[in-house]
Image 1: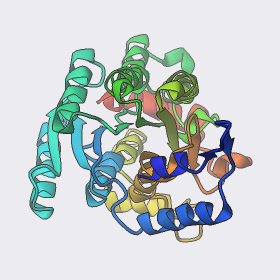
Image 2: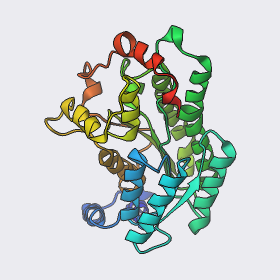
Image 3: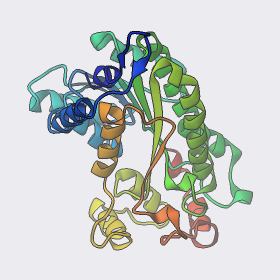
Length: 326
């Protein structure tokens, strides 16, 4: 509805030329946009979210369903993903609210099948949020195991490429769609993560820019969200690799809150879900190729939170084994 409204802004004169719309017409559309934001912003849309069983994925699945989308949860965590789907079906009294599919993002048949499941819901896929990721290979450059490096790239870079490939496949016939990838501030500023993770996240940003240019002629938008540290299971796993003791969810929140750049206001998964909601919806209809950084300005200056991976944490990370690859 919003897209058609903007298309109707111009009117053709007798010579067939498109004229500039009146101010009244522009304000009318702006008012309709303002009204629409108070309603379900994804009503009638079909979305698929990889890595949707917990963390950012879980928060975004819930947010999208609350805004009217039918969501496919794609993950390898079958118990968590199935439970989330059943919970949302119950809470929203609709078996169509969410469904779970097993999907290893490194396996192209899995990714293709997951997109096909989403497409079968209503004959179209409106939103693909490629969010799955792992911490990956750990430690200093001269101690990094190449097999661990390749595993990291399989999940954190190849996985996004496959999601983009098959999103384009199902979206091109309809000439519409929004594709969102999860990046990281580690892809922008050095020293915030292990090398392999940073390399992949920088690659994701480049992949988004390149694919946005190709897919724009098909009406498909591609964007990336780059969060700072978030108190999720992903971060607790990263923190556990730095020591010998498990890190509780409460402890992760405490650490992030203590280091937050906004007073007493830690970044949370819902912040990223809100960013994804914006990029998924019609309000961002002319936004493509963009890196939406959610970091309270951390990367626009010398980062205030510089994790010294290469001097203090890196040896411990290496000694901790391969937990970052799970």
